[in-house]
Image (cartoon, rainbow, N blue to C red; front, side, top):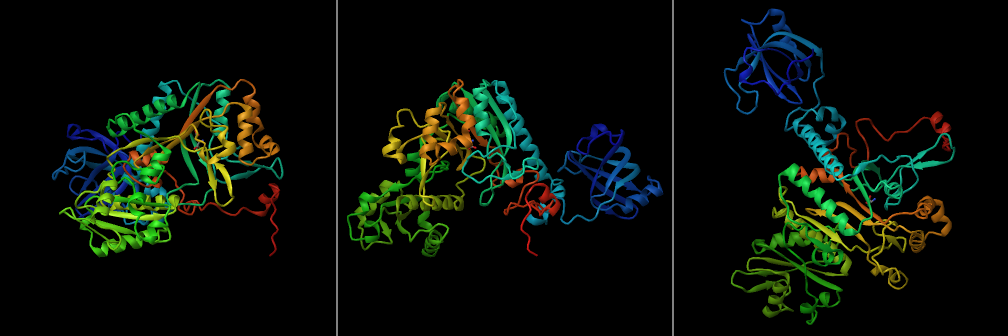
Length: 584
Ligand code: ASP
């Protein structure tokens, strides 16, 4: 037996017990006549003691050779510790070692394996297996396990069945590029890795599974943005014979259960907001509603004076920064520079100080008097001591800019508290979205989403106005889930493909299997998918999803530990029918 106990287990009540422990050497303290070793495993740290007077010479000698991260086994007796360590659960005892075996030596690790490490991000990714030995990383993985267990238990209890769907498939459009896999046996042909199991879960509904879920890997070849992973995990769900309301209730239940189980937080009924309202009030379809700072639209109270910037703008819109009147002129100038950065793209920022005495002082005093400014304050909800920040321009752009400013200010002011949870359903998404690049409408969610009842005709006249039975679950300003009620008849699905620019032949080639299935008694159905990585990181009170993935890719989509992606040799390429034209 390698060990009788873990390193987190022994207490004062175990004194005089003979034990065998195994683990990694966290650190050693060698005073010659006495040597202490901190032995670590997943469960904790136990102190070993070797003492000239009580320990055999050969054992003393081995102990003196132990280096950091050596793997050892130690036998001995549990004794009371002279100077107790109240910081660890095993701090009352230590092991007087009688036998020690080095199971494996270790090179000096490239960074310290402690809660706070000296290793930079890249180094830790390269030696991820060492990083995983550190408490914070290990705890995150254990936390993730708890979340997935809670999800499985909850859904299973509600009669959902976890079904695996294939990874080697044909494209499922979720708005990204596919990762493709060449087929050796079908030269010149490729599988695509699923961007989601969307079509399969719909086919499971046609198959009568009724309630499906799967904790599943999805693959999207997207331009990498910070904290995006090319492969990520979804909690993917689908239900038959449901309306939007049923889905919202079921998955509000799941989310509430998770918040309670994992965070001990009871959340009241989740508020709901339409997409249009979210855009108007927060400039964003995933608003963080833990703090106010709602948008106030100021066109009516600004476009009657000689200030041309505002007069020419499609939208003039402001927010009140609580307590912002304390910002110095320099700080406000910096804020203006911040919104003018190319990433944000505002042309400038107008501000108005709300003084304690009820008066106002704006950067456009030339054009607006106290009475005007009082209206700004009224509309943005600004109180004495606040600062009103106003942006103007094209509606779409200016909302995005002000939304970025709102989040930045909230971050700076500490209003985004990790231990506060504010879920929100955003509903009534548009069915289609105009894409500037391709100058075409795209499905905002995906092409299987059904329009709101009775809105199909609008597709002809005002496609941009058609609303969908689509919804997102937002938590603390992050989209943690999204889904829709699906189209379940062939005609409507064919019509959708047509509007999205597929020829009937293309639609048949790509999605014929689904439209065929719809002809064999497809029940009404709908579903949702949660981004597990993000959900876990938010419940875990942290922002980066990488910290909750055992072996993540870096920001360039590389696995720096195994060094992937990598070139493959010519033989393999040939076998796959992929010989490149290599001109040497
Ligand atoms: N397949 C969708 C997604 O990955 C989720 C859904 O509609 O259920 O976003």
